Length: 166
Image 1 (cartoon, rainbow, N blue to C red):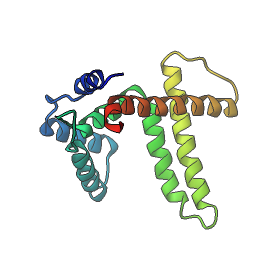
Image 2 (cartoon, rainbow, N blue to C red):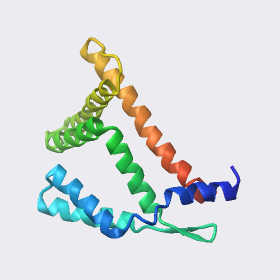
Image 3 (cartoon, rainbow, N blue to C red):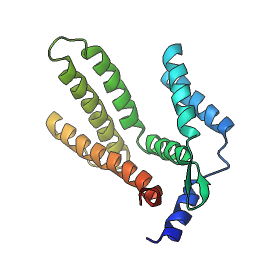
Image 4 (tube, rainbow, N blue to C red):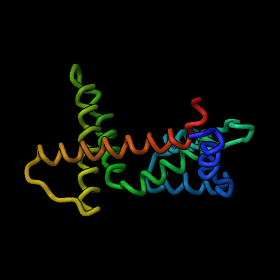
């Protein structure tokens, strides 16, 4: 891909009509949907606002890199709602499990992994995938799908930012 083609592709993702006011509305919807406590909501609001405003000059043009990442993350959550919710629930359980002495760290990782894989399996079923028998098979199918979806997200973000890494 040439530099001019990469810049053209990047500009397609750089939606300048997506304003900070609209990003705040989106962030508030996420906060209310997740029912975050006030201290966590404030930190989430601050971090997402900072991400949204991140810019980089590429090819002599100011590109809102943070907007691209936010839009891709939102698309990912919309395409995989159960996996996003499963990951969040698994991470919350993992937060509590991490307090267990000696094995808490392992249990926390396992909890997040299982939440993401179960959610991914449910997403795959909703998209018309075939149902499998056995818990281990479900976890393996979910883990495979979750891995594919996460790497697809990363690949899309890196493809949009490809010119920035040269």
